[in-house]
Structures are given as C-alpha cells and as structure tokens.
Length: 418
Image 1 (cartoon, rainbow, N blue to C red):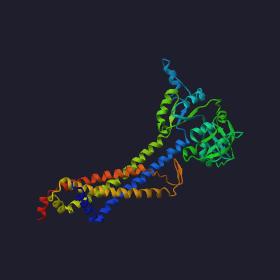
Image 2: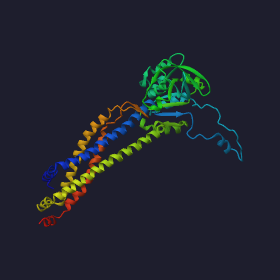
Image 3: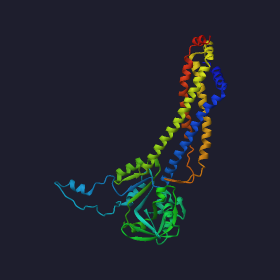
Image 4: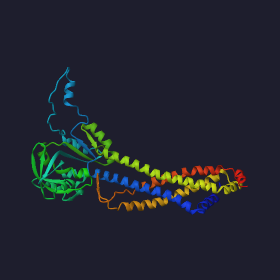
C-alpha cells in the first residue's frame, strides 16, 4: 500500500470542497459537545447526591429487627391445630432494642472493612415552636463516635457538634426543619413524643448537608437525652457504620446481617429509588445524544457518497495506474476518519467550555439536593466515551462509501465517460 500518496489524495479530496467538509465536521462536533454536556449534567447531579449522602449519612445502618419478621399470630397459629377466631387483635406495644449493643459495636469495629461504628437511639418526635409544629426523626448520638461515622460537624453552619454537651439538653436541627419552624440558634424548642411526654431543648446548632431528605427531617441530641425521651433506659436501637470502601456497602451489609441476625441496610439499599432514577436519566441521555451522533453519521455518509460520485474519473485513473481496490477503499475510509477525528477534537473543546459555562448559571435546586447552580461533573471519562463513540459511528458511516469506491470497475467508468 502506497501510504504517502494515499494520504495526499485524501487531503486533496477533503480540501477540494471545504464547506462540505466543514459541515460534516460540525455535525460530529455538535454531537460530541452535547453528549459531553448532557452527560456532565446528569452525572453531576448523581455525583453530588451520592457524595452528600455517603458523607451526611452512614454507609450501613443496623436496625433492631430481622429482615423478615414473622407475624405473632401467624407463629401462634402455626403451632396449634384447628380453627381459631381472633377479634380486636393488635400488635404488642413492646419497644425494640439491640441486645448487648456494646459488644455488638466492639465486634463491628474489629472488622477490617469497618472504619468507624457508633450506637444510636432513633425515634419519631414532634418539634413545637410557638404555633408551628414539625415531625422529625430524633437521633440520639455520642458526638465523638458519630463524628467518626459521618462528620456532622462539617455541615453545621452555626455551632459545633460538641455543643450538644450543653447543660439542660441541646438539639442540632436540620436547616429545612429550622426554616419550617422559624427557629434560630439559641431558641428553646419543645420536643413532644407519641407517648405524650415532652421536654424543652435548646437549639445549639443548625446543619445543612444539601440533601433535602436529611435537612428537613432530622435532629440530633445526646444519646442519653434521647434514651430518656424515648424510654429506652440504657439501650439503643440502631448502630451506624462507616466503611473504608463505601462501594462495598452491599456486600459488607449482607455479611453483617447473616452474622448478627439484625437487618443491615446499605446506603445503596436505603436510596434505591433515587439511584434507579439516575439510571433512567443516563439511559435517556445516551439515547438523545446517540440520536444526534446517528444524524451526524448520515451526514458523513451522504458527503462521502457524493464525493465518490464526483471522483469517478479519478478513481478510474488511480486503478489504471496500478492502485488496488484496497488502496481506494482505504483512501475514502481515511477521509471519514479524518472528519470524525476533527469533529471529536472540536467537540471536546466546545464541550468543555459549554459544560463550564452551564455550571455557572444561577439556577437554584431544591429537590433531592440543594445547590445554587447546576451541578456539573466535568470528568475526563466523559470525553473518552463521547470521543470513542463518535469515532466508531463515523467509521461505520464511512465503510459503505469506501467499499463502494473500491469496488468500482475502471473500464466501466471510462466507457461511460467516453
């Protein structure tokens, strides 16, 4: 194969009609640009949600119940023969709790996959401030142990986690709940439980993780205070873990569950509904950008087909001079690859600047996560995916015209031109 002459011929064909070549390059560039920008937008939103979730919440939560809890009446009926009639039955009012929580926490901390573990007392409470009320998940924590699990202190805008040691009882409140109640640092909030008990706690700090489900529905207090309010004595009903590798949370949770007998829920399982939405978003993104790339591929196909028709005399002359079918096919395939390569280069540059620009637009978000601008993930892998996809599409679009050009018979071409 005469490589240098073929390269010169391919360059001459592309420069002969620069407008047509530029349009083809622009089609590929537009597809790559929007593929990068849309992927950065979708993965940026997902990355922020996952990052804020794994930093603001534990990687694994161990609950005070088995995964498949058998109904009490069903267990009783299975052990008795005959027919029974039950009227007005209702579950027993027995609070659940973890057995031997200190030994459980020590055992979990000894696992090589676990970085930190902390006991929790969790219950539902109603916060009352003036005429306003708000239901929250009240979590009793040990500040030092909890800070090793999910670093609450970094999200506190006003105050510190260790302010919970204030005498008389203290409360850390999520920014969303604080806004709904109209509470500020230093205010006294009345905490009411379902059993009717209540206690006034002082708000010593307001935290904002950026995850709406946490900021609007969570409050922290000392574990001893929560135990008194919830009537737990010295028991706990949850243990939370931070892993060395948060991506292995599912597997580690399954091993822990089989070992201790309590339900262990990974952060992926707890947020399964939201994560499935991100998968659908990615599929839609790739379908849309894939459609753009296919349109660009048809443009390249049309350009090369027209080019083959225009260059019939030159193809006949080259074959008469001894160039093989393989040489002609390679020449036109090379032109498609050049168009694709230039389109990818331009698209990556435009995609970078467009992604950076869109990321600065003041578009506040208050859905699953809170942000003042669109969250973009300008990751290098997005450029690799977009570039490789565009090159593959352009090569496939170039195959048919190149194969057709190499197949042409020079005798028939010259005879038709005579």
